[in-house]
Length: 214
Image 1: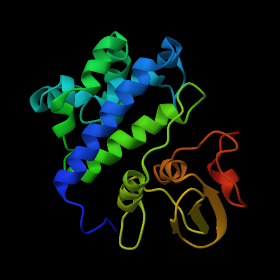
Image 2 (image 1 turned 45 degrees about the vertical axis):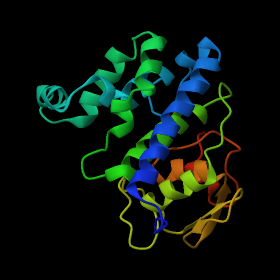
Image 3 (image 1 turned 90 degrees about the vertical axis):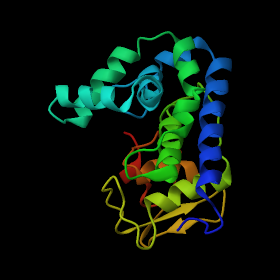
Image 4 (image 1 turned 60 degrees about the horizontal axis):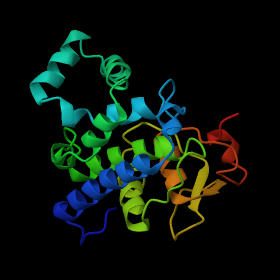
């Protein structure tokens, strides 16, 4: 569960800070990082950033028009927009990450926590994919994200099957489930909860292989 003292305003501030932090990290990184593969299959960093910043470029009617053009297939629409907008100059994508429109956006039905999850997980899709950017998500922030993905009474929004394993963070006090141990940084466990397979040596324990790239 989320911390009952956390308000939507607190989460909105966390969302803005997350996007601004990612923009600063990308701006200071080698230009090569934009073309590095991410944890999203077929997407480089530039496609991930193009996807996560869509609300900064498209109004709701424009978004719905793009979705209607592919008969409601969100995955097809996401791939098309990522491919097209991923070709935008990095300076434009950085500007999008800093957009106040993006910072105020919330996914339909997801609220501020859904917006925070969107920002954190997609950021991890490129920061955890390779050596280009080193980053640890703040503890309070990643626990908030984990609380919206897995836990008592929480329906995993990605339909990830986690029966038979215990996820245990080794960098803060957090665990979930019973069974074969899967331990690692909390932010890597959040990726697992979203259905990602992660690079080797980021997870340990008898159950780690199930969630690790070959």
